Length: 268
Image (tube, rainbow, N blue to C red; front, side, top):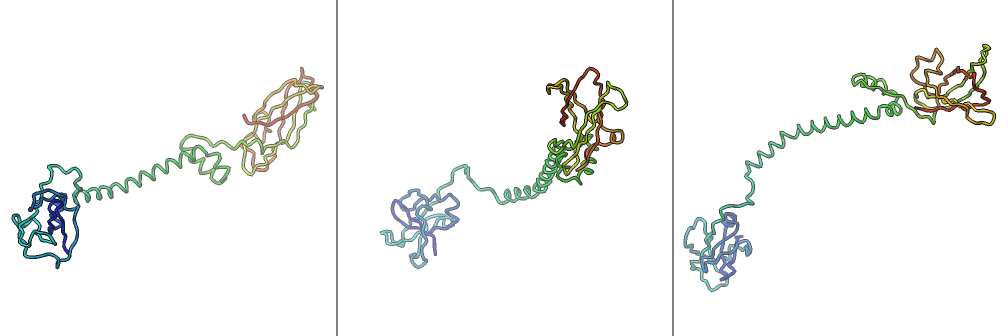
């Protein structure tokens, strides 16, 4: 099979080579009528047997395609030929050279490990930030992680607060009475606090509200763990899961004639 193109002006057909078309973007000049046309626009393929020989080439046989006739008035001895049209001075869409593509590929291969390392470092940084922000929640989800998180915080000079879910802290029992030692100005509050959670919790604060005979508030005061913990419990940092803590509060009630009370738990 051969490549054949046709002049749109005089309908003369010519045999061309791919190198000729590619060299000038397909622009050709007809040797018969001198018209410039794009060889790609009318390019077809034809069998070698349909091409009439001998063919005569006027000039530049190395680059000009051979002419032949196909049912046209121009005979087989026609000296019509195609002269390549010089390409413009600049070709903005010229493809990159193979060397340039190879260099880019090598550069991409060299930078790829660095990108992977950078992505891994960014991922580790993100995991560290999430761990730091939700360190208390992590100890609730995975209690065994607390020792490792405490080591982490020891390096960063941070702390890991214990959970403070007031919904899972309750008062099992409470009692308000005068001091049995015979000091009428001293009143003592006894109570039992229970942690219903399956994880350790921080000690809550207590709000003691004293009421009169009409259940009106006489006074209210908030006590922290340092105020109500027994001596043997003062070294504790948390209430263990499903553990009871006995508390005792002594306060001066000389000017208070309380006949009732309310005891509330809260986290400050």
